[in-house]
Image 1 (spheres, rainbow, N blue to C red):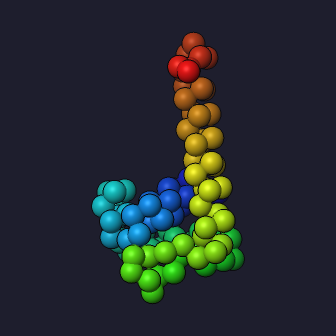
Image 2 (image 1 turned 90 degrees about the vertical axis):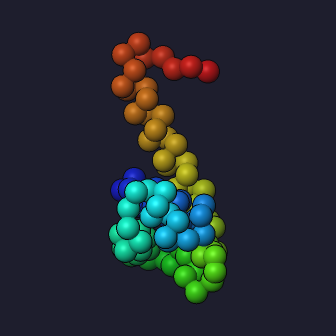
Length: 91
């Protein structure tokens, strides 16, 4: 999965708003919407109920958001581990 798509999806899930997610990501609402749509196309599931205010996760979105968070956390952990010259990290 493209980490940018996952970060965008998580930001919308956290804020309940495409506009607020765009502000958080220093992006535009249009880009956020396109990225979420791309992720939904890849997964072949609608992840967000766009008609709700605030935007809500669908059942598929509820299932996937935990995986998205874990994937992003693992990516960050791997980056930290591999970019730290000593090979150690704080506990």
